[in-house]
Structures are given as C-alpha cells and as structure tokens.
Length: 507
Image (cartoon, rainbow, N blue to C red; front, side, top):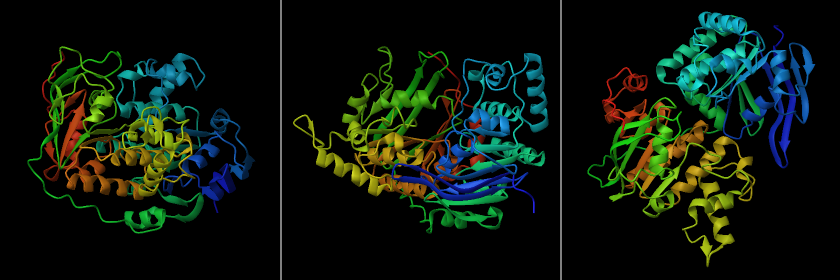
C-alpha cells in the first residue's frame, strides 16, 4: 500500500470541558483531494489548526511523510510542505500582489515575478503581480492566496470553504486548477458544506461528528442526501414551501440611492433601487466586495445619509436616511450582520450579555437594571431553538465555533419578531443540517407576513429562499429577477458583469 502523506493517530484536543477532537485517526494519501465533513462544532477547524501548527494537540501523533512531527507554528508547517488558504483572505489590500507574496516567500523581485507568471500559466492562476490587491476581484484574490501557498512548494494544501466567495462560472475553473495540482503531486484537504461540490472534486472523505471520526468514505459513491445523513446523523427535512403572497405593504424601499463612502477603498453605490414587502423575501446576490457591505451599512443605520440626500431610504413608510441604528430598530427593524465578531457579537462577553445588545427591549431590563432571570431564559431559548452547540448561556461568544455563533446571532434577531428582518450571509459557515433549519425558519416567517432582505453569496440558498433576486456588481443593482423564472447561470452572468446593468450615476 502507498505510504500516507499525512497520518494522524489518536489526536485529541480539549478547551476546558469542551472536547473539540477525540482520538482522531486520519490518513491523507499522496495526490488525493480529501474532504473533511462535519457539522458546526464537529471539530474540523480545530483539526486543521493542529495540522497547520496553529495549536498543539493534547495527545496523539502527527506523522508527516513517514516521520513523527509536532509543528510549533504555521511557518514551520510551511517549511515542511503544508500550506493553507483560509476562508477569509489574509491579504493586505494596500500592497501589491508581489508585496503580499514577499511577506511569506523570500527572493529577489525579478525571480518572484517570474515564478508568479510560471505558476499562473501552469495552473490557470494568472494574476498581475504589480496590481494592488484592492483592485482585484475576489476570484483574483483567491488566486493570489493559492499562488502564495504554491510558492512555498507544498505537498499538502488545506482549503477552507474555497468556493464560498465564487460565482458558478469560477467554481469549475477552481476545480480544474485543483485537479491539475493533484495530478502534479499536491494533496488537498478540502473543507466545504456544499455536498455536491465534494462529490464532484473529492476522491476521499472523512466524516466528523461530535469531535470523533464516524467514517471514511469515497464521496463519489454516495449522493448528497446520503452524505448529509452521515454527517448529521439523521434525515434532512424537506424544504419549507413558500406560500404565494402578493400586494403586501412596503417595509423597505430604497429609491435611486447614490453614495460615495469616506473610505477610498470602499465601493461607491450608484442608483440603488429596491423594495421589500411584507410576506416577501428579496435576495441580493453578488461576488464579495461589489458594494454589499456598503449597502448593508446604509440599511442598518451604521452609516447615515448626508443631509441633502433625503427621501432615499424608507422603513415601514418612514424616511430613515438620517436615523441611527437604534431608531430604526424601534420601528421594527432587525439585522444580523455578516461580521459575526465585532458587529454581531462581542467576543469577550457571555451569550447572555450578547443577547442584551439587541433584545433588551423585550423586558430584559427592569428599572434600568438587567433582569438576569429573563435574560438567561431568553438566551437559553435561543440556544435551544437554534441548536447552538455551547456549554451554556454564560459561555463567551468568542469561544463558539463560527457556525454556532452565526446560529445564535440569527436566532437572537428572529426572536425579536421584527416587521423587517435583514440578514447578511445567514448560513455562512453553517453546516447543512443547521442551514436547512435556518432557511426553513426564514421561509416560515415570510409565510407569516414578515418582510425579509437577504444578502448571500450562496446562489443555492437564494434560489431556495427568495421570491426575487437582485444582483450587485460594482456598486450597481440589477433589476429584480423573479426567482422561479430565473436560472443560476443568468444570475452568474450578472455577477461577472456580462449582463447589461443600469447606467452608473455617481453623485
């Protein structure tokens, strides 16, 4: 038998009472694309951190190319031939591609530029080495991250949710690159919640549940329903049917909004027009970095409009362009932001205190003081309803996995029973079982008459959830598309600018 490139034996890691990994055994074969499947909190991220030298295991053995090793840092792991591309890119936007690579890869400028060009040609990763990162599309930034890893000559490449920021047209391009890397001698550890993608690209898969390995399979021999069942240990429920509603009242209306942010690297918004009615879900698609964050800040009230820009944003029939976030919430608005830590939650605070950040109007305060019993009960209810995997309500938010924190934040906002709910990336990093539960809840709320706006980079999610889809590209929105009459390929063309968009008019 072929000697594994990487072997883990009996790997365990605990954080106080939480057992993130327990007795993990894993073999990664040479020239393979190996998936790691598991629910949020199953231990995937912890395992990758130990492989990449971010954290040491409490017990167990890591065998790399037949030699027992204990990587003390990511730099040491890179020197031994392990590279990792994180879900959130780690590039300095004000530096060029070359300058970002020089931070990790030593060498003369001319030599590095030559290597960047050769890797680009060999693996379909062409990028201008002298371009500043802030001018690149998200697909080009991903190429930079992969090139930077490849220039360290890795034998193993770890990819964390690599397709979460890509439109459909670029996903197959990425897969072609990964197959060429595999055929060129690189093994790949592939983490994704998109089960059809795992079936398409991976030749092996290890399933984690509750920090333990529950199976090693060939994912090509199973359909997505089988993979989901093995991953979460139960059958997936059927999608919640959307009830046809029409003529609801306008809960959010944006009329010809132009906005030039103070940040010189932010995306100006041009002639933004949209309407969300009660009993309706409107989805905004688009490649990350095309103005979604700037639009979210204006809708949430974190950024207010200039005095001269009146009558541009309405909520529940009122002009709110000059109102702050708190005033908009008083009208019946709720918001779950894309950025979980920092905007959605305070990492050093307990879940109970994080509940109070937006839920305090629900009688969680008494005479200006915290009603501890009610605040704890609210938090317990959120944990239970949204299956948040945590030791308890007093756990710090920063101690939760990304997916579990996402479930908590979305659940907290839904429990406010708003008239208008705005959710950015509702299931980003959330496992397939939890994602299904969140989507079913959103559709049920829509059926009960709530107005919901969703920003998502997951096209499958938007097609499952939304009555209408608009696409954001370079700060401009497409016309609304009726979801049932639209194909994903059409949305993908808007995402890359291949469809005509309204003429730009920047104020």
